[in-house]
Length: 599
Image (tube, rainbow, N blue to C red; front, side, top):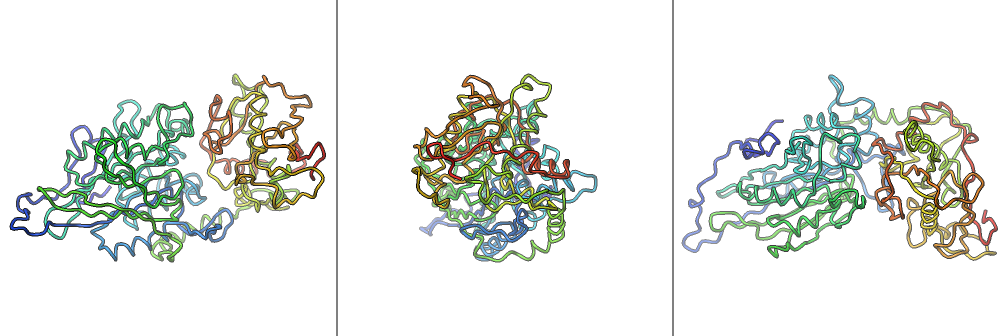
């Protein structure tokens, strides 16, 4: 990796003996005293940050095969971010800016999938990853590792790392045998000031301990991921002792102090706020992982009383964080006098033609790929009414998941147990047409990056789970006409937090109050045995506490993999060649009022 001669880089090789230091001579401090009542020297600079880019270069949705759009008219992609970055560099002067990222870079779109699996960057004479090309062109200084960096295995990640002109940082991604950092823990960058001494800016990268669970298959026995707070407490004092004037943490971890993996790990998943509170010596934290927008948030450090600024730009390149630092030279060193944060919206600018031209060929290849025909369907299927009816298109997701889990458990201790499956109506516009089915049709059924797990549940726990799910419906008295536009999303529950479970039969009585709606719950024609054991094929979002459904996060995990469910669906359709709804569709659940079906 080419190193700027004014950069210090903490690499795993250099950790023990202090990092390799490249070039740059500092002017002796005493040469810069104020003397004679002159005003103190001041210097301001800006650190820009992105996070959770998830493979987005263009403002394009490969699942709908058109320009990205959402209700808030956000835009996505590094081509838009590049335009904002150029504006800030023009305004502040390039040398007065740094550019960093907080992880989840190489997974999430069909563009990133294509260069991991279809035309992999790991092949001999393989391509350069589009995210590496775009980030190199923009001129990133460093990026923290995200948990999704590990989805395609360590060889793909190492190849991506090699292709980047900047370090991937992960102070708490350790080699399982030596317990030394497996990636560079930090970067120290010397920033030249117009008058005298350089400012030494340290960026410490921290990633998510949940990698040990979510990507167990790829990292078990190879890497371990201790907690963010303990590793920050180890590294921040080292960075200060090496002369860092400013310490920034790039953390692939949310700010809320919560975990979605229960007691499976002794570490906190969303620990950025705790790092700010517990570890002295940090000036700012770029927050990632949680996919929320936090323009500016201050946390008081318990030991020093100092306010630490946190900022999380919205995912996929929808926002760019700016940390503005004001420094003052006093007593022979630079100190941070003030730091604030804000976010810029990428929908206010056009895409940078430098980036779109650079990657136009890769983009065209992936558009052709998603439009490939992978099979046929005997009938048209749609999610238009799937939020209130048991539709074949949702059964398709469930049959793929159940078959995948059954195959994974075959021959093992749990092979004889019945496999049930949960799925949600993620989008009310997804469809599988009659006739030719393309990759984008199949992938559009599952717009999220979820992976599949198998958890062990009892009949009683499943009933609780279904009652919780049924809160989604607005209580509707018997007799009157049902208006479907007012039937769902009770208490603002999103569609993706309503689960239909296949393999059981049940009614949801929407005339009853939430918590007492599941009627006639049965398995194979008999009332369910509360003590009976079942395997639930469930996505990792649910399994790790997403939506706050009961029992699943604490249930025994029997199996998990890191393949995205949407790609499992694509493979299934390819293998079958023909999708015949008659072969798998069944009405397992229906809405009723006092025993009378609503539809």
